[in-house]
Image (cartoon, rainbow, N blue to C red; front, side, top):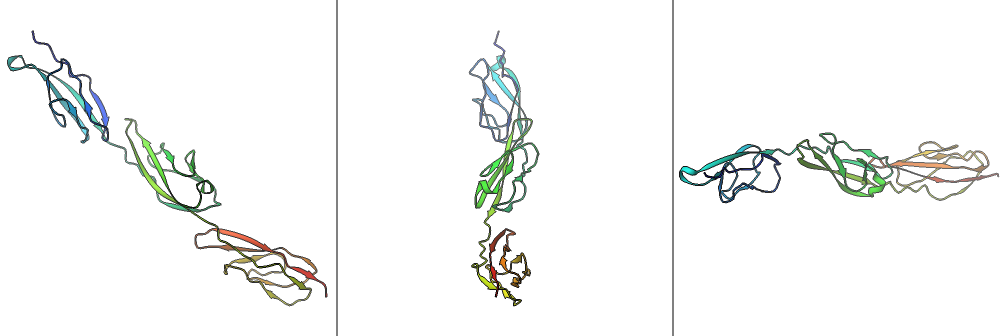
Amino acid sequence: APTQPNAGPDFAVCHNAANVNLAATPTGGTWSGTNVTPAGVFTPNTVGTFTLVYSYGNGNCLLTDTLIATVNPLPVVDAGLDFARCIDAAAVNLGGTPAGGNWSGPGVAANAFTPATAGLGVHTLTYNYTDINGCSSSDVLLATVNPLPVVNAGNDTTLCDQPFPVALVASPAGGTWSGTNVTPAGIFTPNGVGSFVLTYTFTDGNGCVNTTVVNPIVIGL
């Protein structure tokens, strides 16, 4: 009696998997079906469920067996929107959908991005997700780390104790002053003998903030 062929077990692969070399017994038969060659090479380039037929023998003694090949789709993954942070900013908790994936890239640890660890510049962060079928996909976003502005409040100076306002000059212009006897616009009135700590705070176009101080000394007349 002719030998009954065995096409092998059903199987499932992901859409981006490598070609599958089918193994049936006895050898020497022919395969037919969607995306399979007669020699038994199955290409998983189409998502779906396919019946593959293994034929063995010839004429009236041709026997067949089948298996089911399932090609699962890759998950649709979204890393989210690009973002920018100042280099001194706190760590950013990264999201991504579907939830439950893993992040990688400069400055990334435990699915959080630390700007100071990544350093200045534009960094590519990758979100990878694997679904219940073992199929994986990824998406990326760009994380920009901006520097703090370089701020200069000028040199320390010595002034006489008198109620004559002095206009302080700092760079870049447009920041805010704070401290004793100084207005936010930088008008310092040297009333009272002693050393003063005046702070200049500047915020740049990226929202990054830096400060510096100047120490005028007021002496008696």
